Length: 204
Image (cartoon, rainbow, N blue to C red; front, side, top):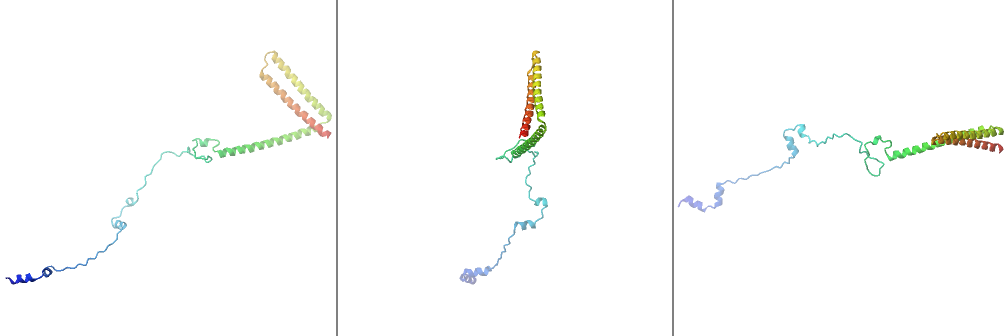
């Protein structure tokens, strides 16, 4: 028997393996480095400003001109649109209409007060003029007024009869005659009233 063979037969397997394969010991150390997306992007080539900028939002271009057709009447209890000729109207809102009505009422009252003032002034002037007349002068004025009314009425009646006789009397002629008589009668009543008023003042 071979000597080397007998010696190898009595060696344990581990010893033989240790002799053939050297034991290697490694100490591995790994370093974990956190890298952000911004750092990675900054390390690369720089982008031009046009590419780096955010995309522009879509823009809607309207060709319609600005219109006042949908203006809101703020006086209304609910929202509603008004006509396109809103600014062409003389009165555009209920508030404006109420204000114009108030102004018209104030103006009417002012004119009414002014008319009353002028009427009182005229009444005072006529009363003063009639009060200057003597009793005989006042009587003569009353007779003259009465004679004028009777004479004018007679003249108008004569003219109306002549037109009727010739067949030319119309409703227009009758209306004119009645208007003249009414005017003269009103004048007579005014003169008579002032004569009576001045006579009463003198007697008191």
